[in-house]
Image (cartoon, rainbow, N blue to C red; front, side, top):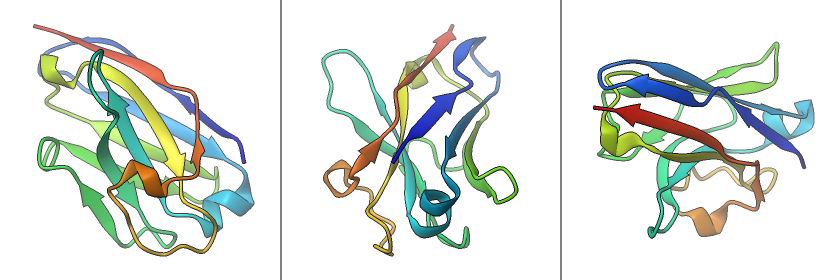
Length: 125
């Protein structure tokens, strides 16, 4: 399973970025997919997740109302639209996938079996 995350960059506080995570069609259609982030000295933390159909979504309290996770079935890509960015959103962001056909939209990183490389997001004040 290969996941390819992209779209990170540097933005001022209040700005927006959109992260993308491309996957094989099989993974995209069969797996719950999530976004996590890690800052130096901290554990990787849950950000958002979306189920196979794209109907069920989960968000961490820190990003709820500002970030939106979505799926593009034509491109087999999961997006994380980030708005009203804050300096505390600065982190390396990772996309991840649960094992195929696990349907629970988990917020626990331990339940995600496959990980993409990270993409850096830096928000300046």
